[in-house]
Image (cartoon, rainbow, N blue to C red; front, top):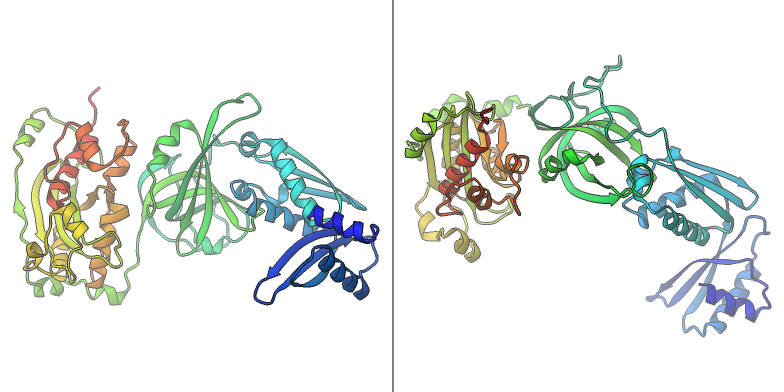
Length: 517
């Protein structure tokens, strides 16, 4: 751009040296090249004669084979415009910082064409950035957008609260009625218990302190940085970004202490979380939820009367049973219980159905279940087995056959999912459900199949993938086979539903043991 201006001014004796090129757009279809020029606020307005002269100069100086159009844009130094461009800078050029910088932390003062900008950053953000690089990058960006002399100062905001805040356990309820809904907490992940019920994201469009929200998470990203200044200079710190979705979405940020990294690493897409934190509007223009406490939860769904009518005893009485659970007794269990093993609340005093499925593919919206295998644990003892093939409506893909060793011949005489899902629902009644990566995969298929047939699983869910990642195990990966080997267990016939379910049940029992003191 500078070279174009130099050549242009050389051709017209510096007549237009006050101009700056804002953008150049070439429309190939119409063969038109449009130049937009900035001119200072103090300069008189550009005329049609100026436009015509510049169009001729540009075509001649640049030897363009295209038609030339010239537009003018006055470089207003309005505070709103400057803030908007600063927002665009972080949104487009420094995406990692965009959600963490608040509009209230930017001060702008101007005298004629001298503009002073002061940006106050959260303690954690200030620690992670290279201050000089950020200033130079922002200066360069603003100089392209305005004709002014900018100065930028970046400082740490001493009013911000660091990660180790002791957030209050209970939020004071205002007199204004707030729409909330019920969730069931499955496990605390970070911080103490969260009360009361969560609000809806759609009702939180403005900055607000001490907000409880819940929803499915996605786009989880862990990032680390080295603190560059202060007492902790040189130390590495982690932060996590993710999206929370309850039908509406909000961007989330959690600055993580080392003690919480392990449990945060265990989070995965589609987990339902209950969170506590503050909402602020970042320069990107989006709400950002600064999370302080997190629990793993599940939503207590409201079942409409029309749905309730489809889950009656008549449905079960009219249904012809096709899968008959078997009583089982593993020989290893007697030995285990001779040692009087104690279990924690995941198992103790509960009925738990540990299940696994095989499918024709990975997409729960399009692919189908080909096998369900499950075992029922009663107060720490494996008591029953549920196992069946399921006949899909389409052939099993060759790559899936190679992985599971389930062929079309094996399922051709199997019952349909419509019949199987009724029996599986009855097997799971009044039980906690458990599986390995069950939230991210297996339960999606089961839930979809059930709802197609008027059934609704409202069971509590335990995921052994989460339990393993938050345990004392230190593994290269947390695949079922890797965990089984690390715990000294056995897995025979992997990628068959019953075998994987039985191995997962043994993992659950092992990870739920209460260590003797």
